[in-house]
Length: 61
Image (cartoon, rainbow, N blue to C red; front, side, top):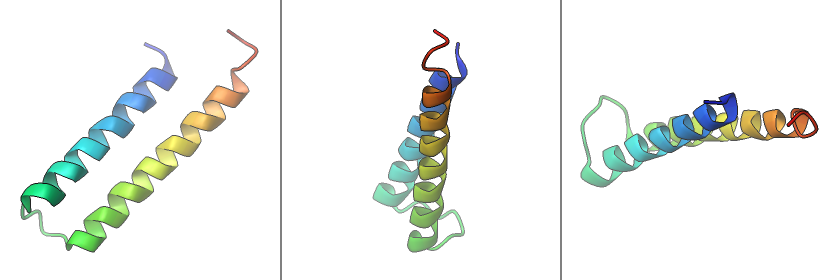
């Protein structure tokens, strides 16, 4: 499994967990806005890293 595939899987899992917590109002000790901010920020960071990996390994495949 390549690092790009792993990053994509991590992004999807973070989004799935965040969606589950927000939809079903699971009490995890964080405010809804705080959880949304953390989930969005994490997905954004992993997305940027994924783009950087894609651009730097473009000619190596």
